[in-house]
Amino acid sequence: MAPSSTPQPRPNVLAIPTYVAGKPPVARPGLTSYKLSSNENPYPPLPGVLEAAAEAAAQMNRYPDMGSTALYAALGEAMGVPTEDLAAATGSVALIYQLVNAFCDPGDEVVYAWRSFEAYPIAVTSGGATSVQVPVTADGRHDLDAMAAAITDRTKVVIVCTPNNPTGPAVTQSELDAFIAKVPSHVVVVVDEAYLEFVRMDDAIDGIATYQRHDNVVLTRTFSKAYGLAGFRVGYAVAPAPLAGALRAVSLPFGVSHVAQAAAIASLSARAELFERVEDLVARRADLLARLREVGWELPDAQGNFVWFPLGEQALDFAAACGEAGISVRPFAGDGVRVSIGEAEAFDRVVEVAARFAS
Image (cartoon, rainbow, N blue to C red; front, side, top):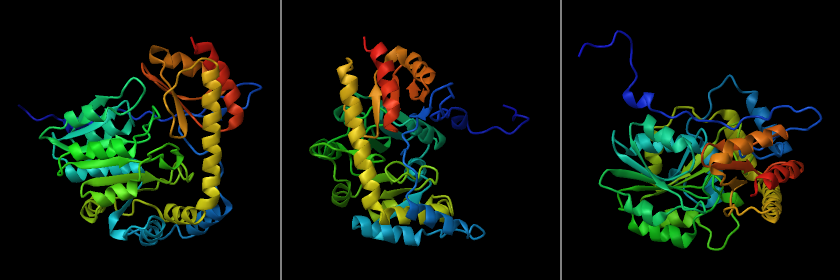
């Protein structure tokens, strides 16, 4: 075959799905608009965190610490783990890309639940690996037995998103332990805990204890949600040293900016104040769920900072109705709609729209 006359990307690049970000609300006359489409923390930065970021920004002419030394030291102290078990990246999503890059050859398989975080198929495809998507249950939970059964000789990575974005339920420690026991020891088990700070349930996962018991478990976490640093892109993995080292080896040099590192360190120091805000968001979540159930909704358990409406083919219509009410939400065509826990004053309108769709 004659070569093409123009440069051509690898075939898998042409197959990469497009990431669809949550849209801002459209201004409506006489209405205050609210963005409930991106699972953002609605609170403004804490003063100490903002000051640390501003001070760091004054050094923008210098490269950041490529080794994230101070950030690793602060994380290690906060979690009681050695710094060699840590890998930082531009948000926890970058760690999924790095995991595929570090552990998958072209054609190797990555098993994960679906619907789940929409960046998974993007990262897997961009790395030349193959997605194996295992449907979630009717109530939005991981079918861990089916996921274990989906593992083949080509599987290199399995991902457990808990709480699952966008459906909401979280995996219990007992369920996770039973699942890991079924996974071959050479397969990397990723426990994606982007929303762990919002979990309030019996038998909740202890991620640190879990990774300490296994040589093949990687935790991925982020400062974007509970810590409110979505705009700075700071995520981190906690894993046995050989796995963490592999993630650092394939990371983008200087990927986490100096400003982001400074803000993350300051946020760790301000955890008491930040987690007061998290408790308020958890209370708002409970209140919204109660109100939605009062108007007739049966919703999956919500353990993140969002609720999930399993609307099926009505997802786009529901999102449009919310938009008319000045609320942007995140629709997943054919599946449902995710509504973030944000400003409490927005929820009256969410409940009004939901009541019209309850039947």
